[in-house]
Length: 142
Image 1 (cartoon, rainbow, N blue to C red):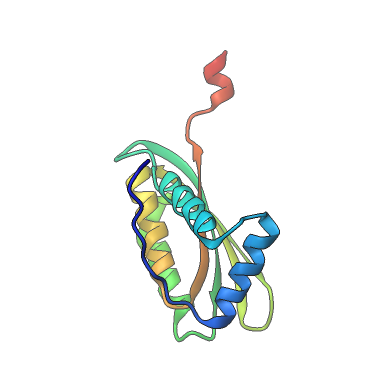
Image 2 (tube, rainbow, N blue to C red):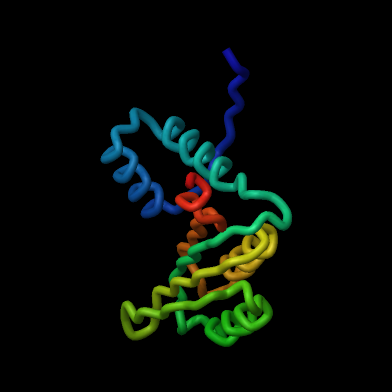
């Protein structure tokens, strides 16, 4: 059996209660099992194609316009990304927040760097990057 290490995590009471409710609904027997699965999923998702391997990507996140100059900083990242950004859609969800969905195409490392920069911006939350094959898998099977 592999060695097991223990660590502690500090969460506010409301976040922990929401997590407990979520994992109970999924059928987890305890927090450890849920955290192990989350870590495995995170590590698997982090295995992006390397270097300059071309990818297509969909990046989604919530942008809170009440947070200083979030929109200006987001625009600057998009401008610096140049041709990597194919397009974006902003959908207002309430008076202060938009859901933003961007499509990107380019070398894996550059696409990931854009996603990382957006995730790190103050005023963005719930950032999710989905990678798609850049090549047409149907044409490759012909």
